[in-house]
Image 1 (cartoon, protein in one colour):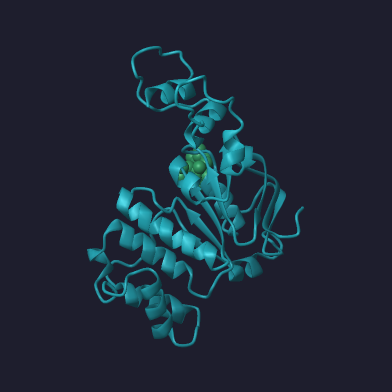
Image 2: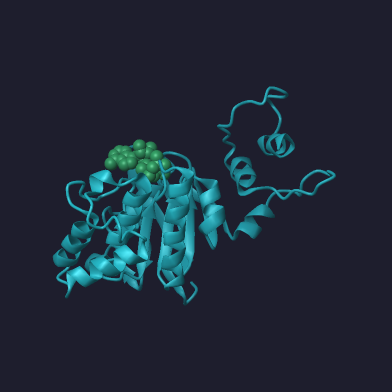
Length: 272
Ligand SMILES: Nc1ncnc2c1ncn2[C@@H]1O[C@H](COP(=O)(O)OP(=O)(O)OP(=O)(O)O)[C@@H](O)[C@H]1O
Ligand SMILES: [Mg+2]
């Protein structure tokens, strides 16, 4: 294990009755980096996040977060991390500022008002701070949700599909917020189904498929897993999407009509 790994996962297994969701998951996340866990619906991304954030017990294997074992030292793990779930956890009836103050109070922090104002400024929500969250756009809600999860300055943050359902502009806003976190030294583990999100944000990308991590590397490393593009007038590198579909054998893009059997990656490259 590398000394600087803040998250260390070894041989993680989890079944729900006969359904073996995780069949031996291994990975590490370096301090202050952004790690993206990619996978299709039902691949087990949320299951991994729930185990690492102590909400769920693994059947086998071990995971260490910030030096604490998630099974044996769950309380210490909880004090170190924060989790932003797949569905926004903000209170609609309260204003953005009131949501932040509430969490700071629940965590018994000094000066909740100042903490709230700092976070509103950091996530460009100062002007909207006194408005009810019910009036916020999806991107503003997500930003508030992430801001709330930063209260108490966790050193590790789990973001489960932070931009699902957001429009492109809101997605960009959340991406900026996540980049800011990593620049500030926070370690970020995010799950996503958006390959572009992983390409844009992550220092390392792992693909969870059929219960295991089938690849784990930088974007450049993942792109090298495919043979270079066929000889063309313009040289094109395979996109992460090409790598993903080639490795998982899944393709949900509409048939272009020419050759249904043709390799998904090739079709996509030529189709551009
Ligand atoms: N409490 C549970 N009981 C039974 N099955 C479950 C439970 N939680 C998850 N599963 C199943 O485990 C599999 C993995 O679920 P998980 O939520 O981890 O996937 P995911 O990768 O997060 O998917 P998505 O992209 O849709 O969020 C799915 O088949 C799901 O139906
Ligand atoms: Mg999920």
